[in-house]
Length: 308
Image (cartoon, rainbow, N blue to C red; front, side):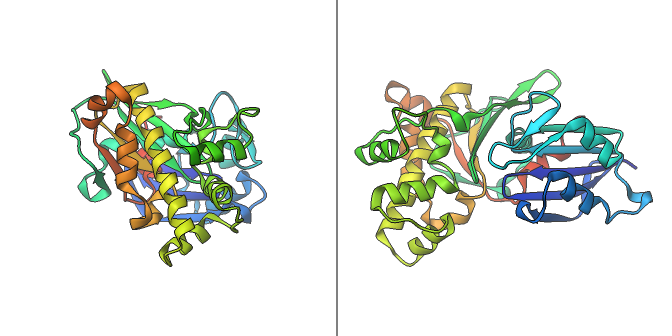
């Protein structure tokens, strides 16, 4: 029996699970990153709950960072670690590290109708590229293409592409974030800190955290509702850009920690309108379906199906 350790490391949470012979067993364990000095501390805390007979013989880690060599530096948390040292610490013979949105992309073919909700029109074309985008502490994106031996995930850092405002209000947010004298990434608006930045720019009010904006929207606060509307529109533009860039005629999926929690305050109509709003290629995008991933921990699903 092969026991594999699965780990999804984000900027806010670390999630662990165990897969036995290709099937996930037991519950997912979630830690807040703030509770640990380092990733090593969190990993060893989780592994210390296992006895020798159940010790993993292989591991797959999904990390919110670019994977360019042995040293991994998280994009939105001041943590870093060595893959070689991680392997020694875990005492696991076979260990791999991939980008977190590459892991989510690998989950897409395994999601059924109960794991997602369709937004708008469009029909998926079999074996065509799939795209995924999601906002949380930052903004991640990836794609999946069909290869001769199965699906191949794409690793990129789409969150740091340029934010391109399309309305006067979005332009005011752009300038409030330092543009054009500074690089304003789309992640700077499509993220938890980005929600706070949008609200402050539009209304001149600081809010403690993104959750506070959602709570105000539920209470009917106009400024909070408009902030979430703008967030939905900009996400639609970014998702449309992704669809065009990789030819995602299999569909584009929304993941991340923010949108699934917004419920009815995610403006699906505004999202879809901006997704399709690409000039002469609007008819092309109208044929591409978009989905909200509703199942929890899709990165762990992708890691289950990742070949070491």
